Image (cartoon, rainbow, N blue to C red; front, side):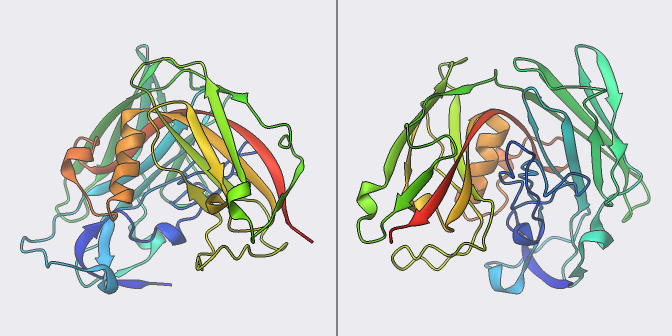
Length: 316
Protein backbone atom coordinates (compact mmCIF):
# COMPACT_ATOMS: atom_id res chain seq x y z
CA UNK A 1 0.00 0.00 0.00
CA UNK A 2 1.36 3.37 -0.97
CA UNK A 3 1.41 6.34 1.41
CA UNK A 4 1.49 9.99 0.44
CA UNK A 5 4.35 11.84 2.11
CA UNK A 6 4.21 15.32 3.60
CA UNK A 7 6.88 17.55 5.09
CA UNK A 8 9.33 16.59 7.80
CA UNK A 9 11.91 13.85 7.69
CA UNK A 10 11.01 11.18 10.22
CA UNK A 11 12.83 8.12 11.47
CA UNK A 12 9.52 6.52 12.28
CA UNK A 13 8.11 6.83 8.76
CA UNK A 14 7.00 3.36 7.82
CA UNK A 15 8.75 1.51 10.63
CA UNK A 16 5.67 -0.50 11.45
CA UNK A 17 5.45 -1.73 7.87
CA UNK A 18 9.11 -2.64 7.60
CA UNK A 19 8.81 -5.48 10.08
CA UNK A 20 11.46 -8.13 10.16
CA UNK A 21 12.10 -10.46 12.98
CA UNK A 22 15.40 -11.71 14.08
CA UNK A 23 16.93 -15.07 13.88
CA UNK A 24 16.51 -18.24 15.78
CA UNK A 25 17.98 -16.36 18.70
CA UNK A 26 15.53 -13.55 18.43
CA UNK A 27 13.04 -11.90 16.18
CA UNK A 28 14.46 -8.39 16.82
CA UNK A 29 14.76 -5.78 17.71
CA UNK A 30 14.11 -2.77 15.96
CA UNK A 31 14.60 -5.08 13.30
CA UNK A 32 11.11 -6.09 13.86
CA UNK A 33 10.01 -2.53 13.61
CA UNK A 34 12.24 -1.64 10.81
CA UNK A 35 12.90 -3.06 7.45
CA UNK A 36 14.62 -6.31 7.21
CA UNK A 37 15.81 -8.89 4.79
CA UNK A 38 13.14 -11.43 4.02
CA UNK A 39 15.62 -14.05 3.04
CA UNK A 40 15.62 -15.29 6.63
CA UNK A 41 12.68 -16.86 8.46
CA UNK A 42 10.54 -14.33 10.24
CA UNK A 43 13.32 -11.97 10.01
CA UNK A 44 16.50 -11.42 11.82
CA UNK A 45 18.14 -8.22 12.74
CA UNK A 46 16.94 -5.76 14.08
CA UNK A 47 16.82 -5.12 10.97
CA UNK A 48 15.70 -4.78 14.07
CA UNK A 49 15.78 -2.03 11.12
CA UNK A 50 14.98 2.07 10.57
CA UNK A 51 13.67 3.79 7.48
CA UNK A 52 14.03 7.52 7.05
CA UNK A 53 11.36 9.09 4.88
CA UNK A 54 9.42 12.30 4.61
CA UNK A 55 6.72 12.01 7.25
CA UNK A 56 3.13 11.12 6.56
CA UNK A 57 0.61 13.96 6.80
CA UNK A 58 -0.48 13.08 10.31
CA UNK A 59 3.10 13.24 11.56
CA UNK A 60 3.90 16.67 10.19
CA UNK A 61 4.87 19.63 12.35
CA UNK A 62 6.72 22.28 10.32
CA UNK A 63 7.07 22.44 6.52
CA UNK A 64 10.51 22.02 4.97
CA UNK A 65 11.55 25.19 3.18
CA UNK A 66 14.45 23.82 1.14
CA UNK A 67 14.18 21.86 -2.09
CA UNK A 68 14.19 18.07 -1.95
CA UNK A 69 17.59 16.41 -2.26
CA UNK A 70 17.69 12.66 -2.61
CA UNK A 71 19.49 10.83 0.16
CA UNK A 72 20.16 7.17 0.84
CA UNK A 73 18.89 5.75 4.12
CA UNK A 74 20.79 2.86 5.68
CA UNK A 75 19.29 0.43 8.19
CA UNK A 76 21.71 -2.18 9.48
CA UNK A 77 22.61 -3.81 12.77
CA UNK A 78 25.37 -6.38 13.09
CA UNK A 79 25.85 -8.73 16.05
CA UNK A 80 28.85 -10.42 17.64
CA UNK A 81 29.25 -14.08 16.60
CA UNK A 82 26.64 -13.77 13.83
CA UNK A 83 26.62 -13.28 10.08
CA UNK A 84 25.68 -9.94 8.50
CA UNK A 85 22.12 -10.78 7.58
CA UNK A 86 21.00 -7.46 6.15
CA UNK A 87 21.97 -3.98 5.11
CA UNK A 88 18.73 -2.30 4.02
CA UNK A 89 18.88 0.65 1.61
CA UNK A 90 16.12 3.08 0.59
CA UNK A 91 15.96 6.45 -1.07
CA UNK A 92 14.18 9.23 0.78
CA UNK A 93 10.74 10.15 -0.52
CA UNK A 94 10.10 13.56 -2.13
CA UNK A 95 7.32 15.76 -0.78
CA UNK A 96 3.97 14.83 -2.31
CA UNK A 97 5.07 11.45 -3.62
CA UNK A 98 3.41 8.20 -2.63
CA UNK A 99 5.76 5.90 -0.76
CA UNK A 100 6.10 2.25 -1.67
CA UNK A 101 8.88 0.03 -0.33
CA UNK A 102 9.89 -1.40 -3.69
CA UNK A 103 9.73 1.97 -5.45
CA UNK A 104 12.34 3.49 -3.11
CA UNK A 105 14.40 0.40 -2.24
CA UNK A 106 17.91 0.70 -3.69
CA UNK A 107 19.05 -2.10 -5.98
CA UNK A 108 22.34 -2.46 -7.87
CA UNK A 109 24.28 -0.76 -5.08
CA UNK A 110 27.82 -1.78 -4.22
CA UNK A 111 27.90 -2.58 -0.50
CA UNK A 112 31.26 -3.40 1.09
CA UNK A 113 32.20 -4.27 4.66
CA UNK A 114 35.88 -4.04 5.59
CA UNK A 115 37.61 -5.25 8.75
CA UNK A 116 41.33 -5.72 9.42
CA UNK A 117 42.05 -4.63 5.86
CA UNK A 118 39.90 -7.36 4.31
CA UNK A 119 36.97 -6.18 2.18
CA UNK A 120 33.88 -8.30 1.51
CA UNK A 121 31.19 -7.31 -1.00
CA UNK A 122 27.68 -8.06 0.20
CA UNK A 123 25.24 -10.01 -1.95
CA UNK A 124 21.79 -8.77 -3.00
CA UNK A 125 18.97 -10.59 -1.22
CA UNK A 126 15.76 -11.70 -2.90
CA UNK A 127 13.89 -8.66 -1.61
CA UNK A 128 14.92 -5.45 -3.35
CA UNK A 129 17.15 -3.10 -1.36
CA UNK A 130 18.48 -5.77 1.01
CA UNK A 131 22.09 -6.98 1.05
CA UNK A 132 23.73 -9.72 3.13
CA UNK A 133 26.90 -11.72 3.69
CA UNK A 134 26.63 -15.42 4.62
CA UNK A 135 28.43 -16.89 7.62
CA UNK A 136 30.66 -18.83 5.24
CA UNK A 137 32.14 -15.47 4.22
CA UNK A 138 32.18 -13.59 7.51
CA UNK A 139 31.14 -13.98 11.14
CA UNK A 140 31.16 -10.72 13.07
CA UNK A 141 33.70 -10.64 15.91
CA UNK A 142 33.38 -8.69 19.14
CA UNK A 143 35.99 -5.99 19.66
CA UNK A 144 36.54 -5.55 15.91
CA UNK A 145 35.78 -2.39 13.92
CA UNK A 146 33.74 -2.83 10.73
CA UNK A 147 33.71 -0.17 8.03
CA UNK A 148 30.75 0.09 5.67
CA UNK A 149 31.02 1.60 2.18
CA UNK A 150 28.01 2.04 -0.10
CA UNK A 151 28.06 3.27 -3.68
CA UNK A 152 24.67 3.83 -5.31
CA UNK A 153 23.14 5.76 -8.19
CA UNK A 154 21.67 9.17 -7.42
CA UNK A 155 18.44 9.00 -9.44
CA UNK A 156 17.76 12.70 -8.92
CA UNK A 157 21.00 14.01 -10.41
CA UNK A 158 22.36 11.03 -12.34
CA UNK A 159 25.46 11.11 -10.17
CA UNK A 160 26.63 8.78 -7.44
CA UNK A 161 25.98 8.48 -3.72
CA UNK A 162 28.99 7.43 -1.66
CA UNK A 163 28.24 6.59 1.96
CA UNK A 164 30.57 5.42 4.72
CA UNK A 165 30.10 4.40 8.34
CA UNK A 166 31.93 2.46 11.02
CA UNK A 167 31.03 0.49 14.12
CA UNK A 168 33.11 -1.24 16.77
CA UNK A 169 31.27 -4.35 17.92
CA UNK A 170 30.84 -4.94 21.67
CA UNK A 171 32.35 -8.09 23.11
CA UNK A 172 30.00 -11.07 23.50
CA UNK A 173 27.82 -11.15 26.61
CA UNK A 174 25.78 -13.75 28.42
CA UNK A 175 23.00 -13.52 30.94
CA UNK A 176 24.48 -13.93 34.41
CA UNK A 177 21.47 -13.88 36.66
CA UNK A 178 18.29 -15.52 35.39
CA UNK A 179 15.36 -16.16 37.74
CA UNK A 180 14.66 -19.88 38.29
CA UNK A 181 11.19 -19.39 36.77
CA UNK A 182 12.73 -18.53 33.39
CA UNK A 183 14.53 -20.83 30.92
CA UNK A 184 11.49 -21.66 28.85
CA UNK A 185 9.27 -22.07 31.87
CA UNK A 186 5.70 -20.85 32.22
CA UNK A 187 5.23 -17.66 34.23
CA UNK A 188 1.82 -16.55 35.48
CA UNK A 189 0.83 -12.91 35.01
CA UNK A 190 -1.86 -11.69 37.38
CA UNK A 191 -3.26 -8.47 35.90
CA UNK A 192 -4.80 -7.63 39.29
CA UNK A 193 -1.33 -7.61 40.89
CA UNK A 194 1.07 -6.35 38.23
CA UNK A 195 3.64 -5.18 40.79
CA UNK A 196 4.35 -8.81 41.66
CA UNK A 197 5.55 -9.49 38.12
CA UNK A 198 9.11 -8.15 38.33
CA UNK A 199 12.46 -9.78 37.63
CA UNK A 200 16.01 -8.48 37.42
CA UNK A 201 18.22 -9.59 34.53
CA UNK A 202 21.97 -9.00 34.52
CA UNK A 203 24.56 -9.72 31.85
CA UNK A 204 28.31 -9.67 31.48
CA UNK A 205 31.18 -9.41 31.21
CA UNK A 206 31.43 -5.62 30.95
CA UNK A 207 33.93 -4.76 28.22
CA UNK A 208 33.91 -0.96 28.64
CA UNK A 209 33.01 1.24 31.59
CA UNK A 210 30.80 3.46 29.40
CA UNK A 211 29.00 0.56 27.66
CA UNK A 212 25.24 0.99 27.28
CA UNK A 213 22.59 -1.70 27.35
CA UNK A 214 19.11 -2.38 26.04
CA UNK A 215 16.46 -5.04 26.51
CA UNK A 216 13.64 -6.14 24.23
CA UNK A 217 10.71 -8.53 24.62
CA UNK A 218 9.24 -10.12 21.49
CA UNK A 219 5.92 -11.97 21.42
CA UNK A 220 6.46 -15.11 19.35
CA UNK A 221 2.79 -16.12 19.09
CA UNK A 222 -0.11 -13.67 19.19
CA UNK A 223 -2.77 -16.39 19.03
CA UNK A 224 -2.73 -17.12 22.76
CA UNK A 225 -4.31 -13.81 23.67
CA UNK A 226 -3.77 -10.13 24.36
CA UNK A 227 -2.61 -8.94 27.77
CA UNK A 228 -4.88 -6.15 28.96
CA UNK A 229 -2.52 -4.12 31.07
CA UNK A 230 -4.37 -1.11 32.45
CA UNK A 231 -5.21 1.40 29.73
CA UNK A 232 -2.52 0.14 27.36
CA UNK A 233 -4.13 -0.63 23.98
CA UNK A 234 -0.92 -1.28 22.03
CA UNK A 235 -0.70 -4.47 19.98
CA UNK A 236 3.04 -4.23 19.28
CA UNK A 237 4.86 -7.56 19.24
CA UNK A 238 8.16 -6.00 20.34
CA UNK A 239 8.86 -3.68 23.24
CA UNK A 240 12.09 -2.09 24.40
CA UNK A 241 13.53 -0.81 27.62
CA UNK A 242 15.13 2.59 27.97
CA UNK A 243 18.89 2.64 27.45
CA UNK A 244 20.68 1.51 30.61
CA UNK A 245 24.18 2.57 31.65
CA UNK A 246 24.80 -0.67 33.55
CA UNK A 247 24.24 -4.35 32.77
CA UNK A 248 21.13 -4.68 34.95
CA UNK A 249 17.60 -4.19 33.62
CA UNK A 250 14.35 -4.98 35.39
CA UNK A 251 11.67 -6.98 33.56
CA UNK A 252 8.17 -5.83 34.45
CA UNK A 253 4.68 -6.46 33.10
CA UNK A 254 4.86 -3.39 30.85
CA UNK A 255 7.15 -5.27 28.44
CA UNK A 256 4.51 -7.89 27.68
CA UNK A 257 1.66 -7.31 25.25
CA UNK A 258 0.74 -10.91 24.44
CA UNK A 259 0.39 -14.11 26.41
CA UNK A 260 2.22 -17.17 25.17
CA UNK A 261 5.91 -17.60 24.27
CA UNK A 262 8.00 -14.44 24.56
CA UNK A 263 11.67 -13.95 23.73
CA UNK A 264 13.70 -11.67 26.01
CA UNK A 265 16.89 -10.27 24.47
CA UNK A 266 19.60 -8.43 26.41
CA UNK A 267 21.91 -6.23 24.31
CA UNK A 268 25.24 -4.54 24.89
CA UNK A 269 25.13 -1.78 22.26
CA UNK A 270 27.58 0.52 20.52
CA UNK A 271 27.25 4.31 20.21
CA UNK A 272 25.52 4.14 16.82
CA UNK A 273 22.86 1.76 18.12
CA UNK A 274 22.36 3.90 21.24
CA UNK A 275 22.00 7.13 19.28
CA UNK A 276 19.50 5.47 16.94
CA UNK A 277 17.42 4.51 19.98
CA UNK A 278 17.65 8.08 21.25
CA UNK A 279 16.25 9.40 17.99
CA UNK A 280 13.31 7.04 18.22
CA UNK A 281 12.61 7.89 21.85
CA UNK A 282 12.87 11.57 20.94
CA UNK A 283 9.85 11.35 18.65
CA UNK A 284 11.49 9.74 15.63
CA UNK A 285 12.56 12.99 13.97
CA UNK A 286 15.95 13.10 12.30
CA UNK A 287 18.66 14.66 14.48
CA UNK A 288 21.88 15.35 12.55
CA UNK A 289 24.09 15.14 15.65
CA UNK A 290 22.95 11.55 16.22
CA UNK A 291 23.50 10.45 12.62
CA UNK A 292 26.68 8.43 12.03
CA UNK A 293 26.29 7.77 8.29
CA UNK A 294 28.67 9.92 6.25
CA UNK A 295 27.07 10.98 2.97
CA UNK A 296 23.63 9.70 3.97
CA UNK A 297 21.30 9.03 6.86
CA UNK A 298 20.25 6.05 8.95
CA UNK A 299 22.08 3.63 11.19
CA UNK A 300 24.94 1.15 11.00
CA UNK A 301 25.11 -0.10 14.54
CA UNK A 302 26.31 -3.16 16.39
CA UNK A 303 25.62 -5.13 19.53
CA UNK A 304 26.28 -8.32 21.42
CA UNK A 305 23.21 -10.14 22.68
CA UNK A 306 21.94 -13.06 24.66
CA UNK A 307 18.39 -14.38 24.96
CA UNK A 308 16.05 -16.30 27.21
CA UNK A 309 12.50 -17.37 26.46
CA UNK A 310 9.50 -17.69 28.78
CA UNK A 311 5.83 -18.54 28.37
CA UNK A 312 3.48 -15.99 29.93
CA UNK A 313 0.03 -17.23 30.87
CA UNK A 314 -2.92 -15.54 32.59
CA UNK A 315 -3.89 -16.39 36.14
CA UNK A 316 -6.82 -18.76 36.09
